[in-house]
Image 1 (tube, rainbow, N blue to C red):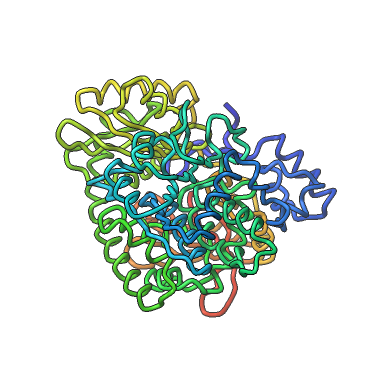
Image 2 (cartoon, rainbow, N blue to C red):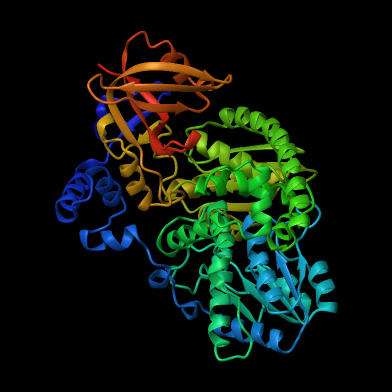
Length: 581
């Protein structure tokens, strides 16, 4: 085990600090010498394995350069031609979508594009509790009676029987892990099919849908119809990519960067209304997408009417958007109350099972299916291990899982299903869903833990805080923060840079409400830096820093620019601290 960074083996929050390592240090120094960029930025680039030759392009990524040729995906040509035939033939199209953000955004992409082309479509999203995830026989047969084409988005790759039962052409646009055989659709476009290379496996479903629209638009060149400007659709792709925890690497990074710019223009009524009810007062960031907008879109599918989110994202009526956003905001509040109750019970049970195992899991009677995924995410965050949470009802349990970097939960769940230990299961690297018989629950979770252990789950301790280096207060400028932001956006697969300020003196502290702490610090010779600790008094950080008594601390967190009151100031979003000396 490598030496603890700054000697912090047990911080105030009980974590061990881990530095960048000698290899990253050498690459960062080489980058700084070759490019002239600031050393802290070079550390961030080095962690992303960016070479001096790649640095300029990485800091200003071009979607034109990074967007893959849609035809790299199998069945893309068939899907594009069939979709175009439905459009030109004025055929009746139904869009069958999953009930989460990725499904809603994917559906909204198609519905909006078709509307702008003067062609309507029917939206169908199954009820989470009554119908469960993905196509089912009854729904597909009902849609087939009144439509000529069904497009399944963010679902369908494993839906053999429902697609066969439809009896009409079905296009699947998905990203969930495929099985050994494909369903009898006319096209299955999925970068995670088993016969794909996996190079584009990081795309979410909305990214796949966007590539279809790119290919369709390309094939319509020279047509008398004016096609929509697809760049204006990237706000939806960005929202889905972040909310579905797709890694922000490769083309995903460019899609989200450009999508955030589009979203900031406030041209999509649904996202404008949603941002307003979420009280967003600054330009959108991945944080806003993942923690403010995404949960509200998801709330309809979790505990309310399944199609509200997709309807909000696809509407062009500001009045309808405002009403739908208000409804989702209320549902989100209800969801939080349900989630809190389930989370407390799940954490207590997970502790009984053991938080050091490769898999953290819990199952409870009547736990709402709409919140088990969120609670699994909370368990994962608290333990740094894959987590599964299951709601039991009768002889069956339905659950959801979330994974950590480097552990493919979807593949493990798929294998578990193929071994007969699950009634149903599937997903992708970072998230999965499953159904299990009550009498096989313990056996299934034990086997899943074994499969995840084979991938290394449980080897990384929950007490590790990874840092990109040290900074002194004089180096923490708004210019540096803006340069570091240029290496983003940050999120899944691209964690935000964290720096340590060593041996700092705390100059001033002030409580914000009951839980948060505002403070300023310095090295006593340079300028002071402002800092905020959210939820400080829910952890040991608040009491220790507030009653510092003149003691000096190593402080760690993420740098950001605070625009409050019209003034731009550097602020450290403090996440951890340790006594110096």
